[in-house]
Length: 244
Image (cartoon, rainbow, N blue to C red; front, side):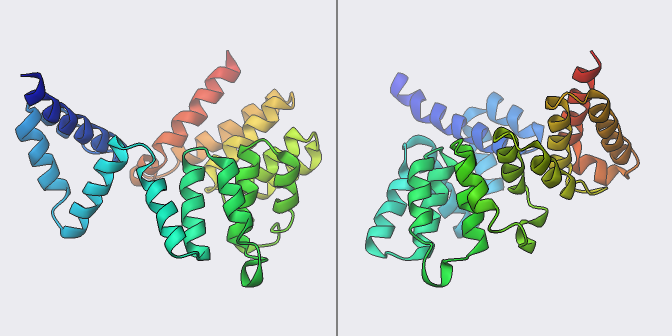
């Protein structure tokens, strides 16, 4: 009996995990929970019906139940074909699971030839250096790309701003936050700026900034509001915390 139910339980767990990470309609959760076998099969049929999607499902199952499956696969791919694109793909996966040392080693090994000044590669190195709490290295690489258009309003620019903050260079940190403080856009960056104001003991400025963000989103139509639902909740939560 236990052997019979184990595959069903694994199938149900995978479907629930996929539905959660894909922000699927709530009805699917009830269908999968109430009808573990039929519900899961219907969900899989409804979600994965092309050959490409079936291949992606297979990869998803392996990634969910086999530790480091994708990394092992990419390591073998790199041994077979030692290219910059394969190195970056493998490094991206290592970074995704928090293996920043390995990711940085791979990224830095690509910094030569035509890729010596590759802004997208430098952004990855800067961001991973920040995540590793090597703020001076993050600043070193970030300052090489401050004039790059691809970096200007990117979320990764937050890593440079926060690196300046942790390095106690508050003026440069605020300069970077201000560069990203653009009305009706960059809400994640502007929420981070609000947090910076809070951390630097400027509660009134923080409160004013948060209220501006709330007012902007409140003025949007329903479609735009829905697309900002998650960040709006975070802004409201910080505003509430600040006032209590």
